[in-house]
Length: 175
Image 1 (cartoon, rainbow, N blue to C red):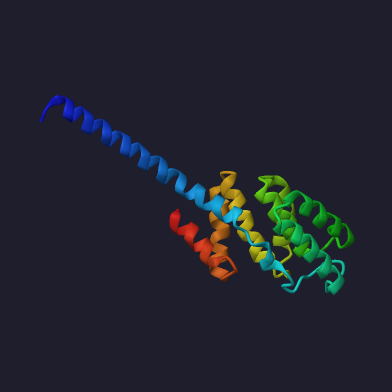
Image 2 (cartoon, rainbow, N blue to C red):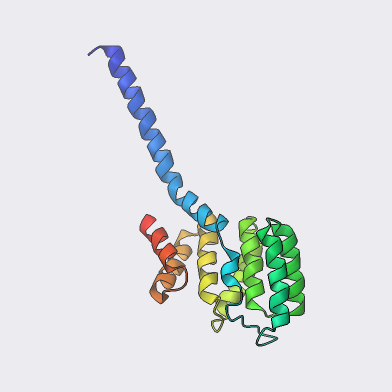
C-alpha cells in the first residue's frame, strides 16, 4: 500500500468516527426534543379534570377548553396559550389548564414558565395529571442539563407505571 492511500484511509476513518461520535452525542437530545414536539394535547381532553377551586370541572368549562384546544391543533400555540390562560383566570386551580399551558411553554422553549405550572400540578398528588407533570418536568430538566433530577423523575414514572412509563423507560435505556 502506498503512503497516500494510508493517509486517505486514515482521514476517512477519522471523519467517519467523528461523524459517529457527533451523531451518538446528539441522539439523546434529539429524542428528548422529539418527545417535546410530538406532545398530543388531545390526550388530556376530559380525563377527569380536578380543580382546586371548582370541583368537578363543568361541561361548560370542558367546552371552553375544547374550543381553545382546536386553536392549538391548528398550530396557533400562542393564541391557544392566551386562551388557556384566560380560562385559568376563571378556574385558577384547574390542573388540566395548568398542564396545557405548561405544554405550550415547553414547546416554545419557555422552560421556567413551564416549570412553574408543572410543579404546581406535580405537587397536587390527587390530580390525575401529577404523573404526567413529572414526565414533562423530566424533559425540561434534560434540556436544562439537570440530568440527575430528570433521571430521578423518570425512575418514579417507570416505578409508578404512569402514562409515559414506556417513554420514560426509553430515555432511561438511552442513559
